[in-house]
Length: 203
Image (cartoon, rainbow, N blue to C red; front, side):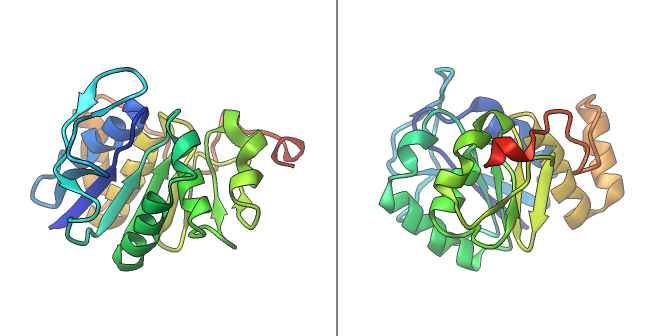
């Protein structure tokens, strides 16, 4: 049983969180899903609906997998030293650290993606280097797996990334079943990116 801790912050992106968790949550004997945040209060998404919290980041037990979503709130959280410090500490003991969309900016600001390949929402690539100048940002990638860090492109790409995680941890049959049960047509090629941007955009 692996615990998957999802970091929530005000104005997180709904699908960044619930897309991957829909897939991972199909295997309750393998994954325990918890929501964590700075405070106990329910956290409002960019779209409005709030999500209850299972544990504060200062009280939670170590988790095997971290999920870091993006959303408008990342513009503020990249300067939240408490969250960045937690990311460093929690990532040190985690088996996998995953992000969706601009959640990669939080990992980059924490220094966790230095000298690694990573990707993020292609609409945000013009500012990617500001958050992680030492990150090898990939302009053409649905998701990128480098060591224990797995970063997905924009929003819906998190679903494909989560299926890749399921495939790696539970096997091809499990990933295929998750896509079938949810009637989802997965992109199984991390390099197949219909929203790719040019090298000029990255610079």
